[in-house]
Length: 262
Image (cartoon, rainbow, N blue to C red; front, side, top):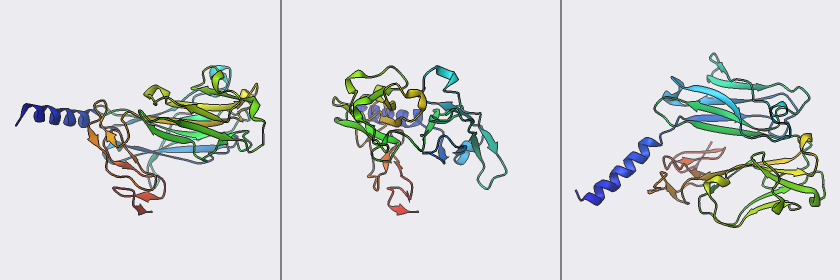
């Protein structure tokens, strides 16, 4: 076999084996009612049910004063006797908006890549909410013209809008606009929790949140860092998994290409 072909095949196989991840699904309730008691469940798939450690985490501080207003979620409890055994994280409301924000599970298993999945919780009386009614937006490395747009259910004046990313200081260049725009090509480090708040009211936990996910590969490619795999076609809003090229289907669809309705 020609040397160039052997090298390419080796890179592809190395990429696939190196990127094998723990398979986990997160189910959540009360997305728009963080002030109420709620929970989320983390389900492991197939052989990953054995030998995998599951922990909980908070993705970013979304209120002032650090850990006092942004506690870590309780440790997951394994519900062994359920019809579908899973890890359960129960968020008991204490009247302090502790469970407002982006929370999730981390699954680790020796020999596999760690998996992190998040869920977003906002108040039912939020001043701002994602215009597309989705908490998460997935884009590809190199995409241009990416926008995160909010609207105000309470009709707040947009002049008071302020933006943050990953809990850091305000991004003054985007103040006063309900749309956060990234005009240049998207990079991996643009990923994170974007927060649309009203000036001076961050601790009220009534801001809008959007989680931006950035695939490590360009559109239709998979297998970082070389990204030489070609994605299959994903329909009905399905997204190509950057690690194995398979379609990740949205709720209500399944199958190789997300063509089958549930």
